[in-house]
Length: 390
Image 1: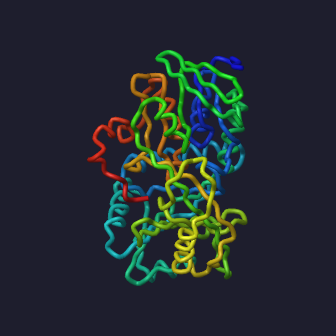
Image 2: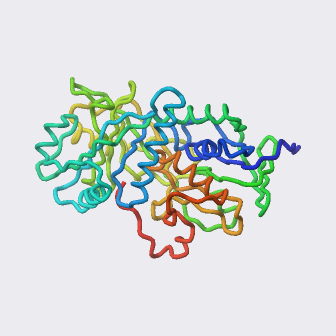
Image 3: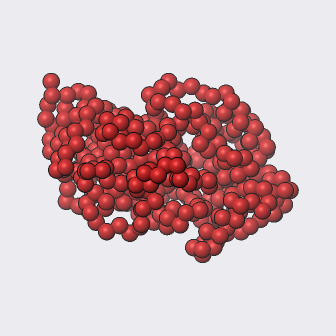
């Protein structure tokens, strides 16, 4: 039996980093807000869990560099509110064969924004950062401002803050119906409850495609299950955040990455965007092939780490065909904003993306030009240019 459970100014579907950040951005707007999440904050079946995420400036596209600058400030402000930092600076090294076009692009973009960096030979790099081993034919770009975000801490803190500030949060509430209207939306759950709202933010992560199909929209999204493994040190070389830099390694078409140890889990490593295409509710299975690839990378690049992982985890990626974010109003509905395709590098931008989504929904001036994220680009799918830098 259906049961009406309330009327809201804004309903948010999805309680990952994007949904929580959107709710946080709505604080102080004088609006009644409801957030619906099918599980619990930081649950392990989605894209927003784990001990760490990189936050960094090393991008090709200027928009992401500008968003990173705003994100650093936003995360700092959250840390001030909760009384403890949610990130720690540790630097980042981008590794590639000498004279790589990717390193040239990164170097040029950092120079454009007058961000500090050093271009290091393999010999200089290996002496300075003994956690890594780089061959003589390669080089590195080191950028000192990069940091590690404490992801689980950030998620739980955002959820606590929005509750304190009056957002209604319904956890373990699976949404089964969304009825769109130009002035009002209606959202229903499996237990028969339903809510009405003037505006809707759809931030459903890996489950977004199901809703787009229901709305009759042809927006291709690919969901993959990405393997993440943690490796323990075998020597006295320090591998914790603050001592070891983040790393993105471009010696292979799909870059490998490392994040230094946070707590007691070990150094996190994986291979970007190589997971198997899945449905988000498929059973979780460890890919032996992908695990061996990460182990081989660790054996070659991080010789002071054990090849045998301490633990293996997974994270769902949801990506558009060009690997850029999707942030836009739904066609024909000025009161519904879609947020999708953030996986692999979106977490760091959470508070900034929340402000963008809220600004777009409420027709406010946006500080950034987000044309890059608009739905209109899919009108000409054949000529979309995919991102190549992680």
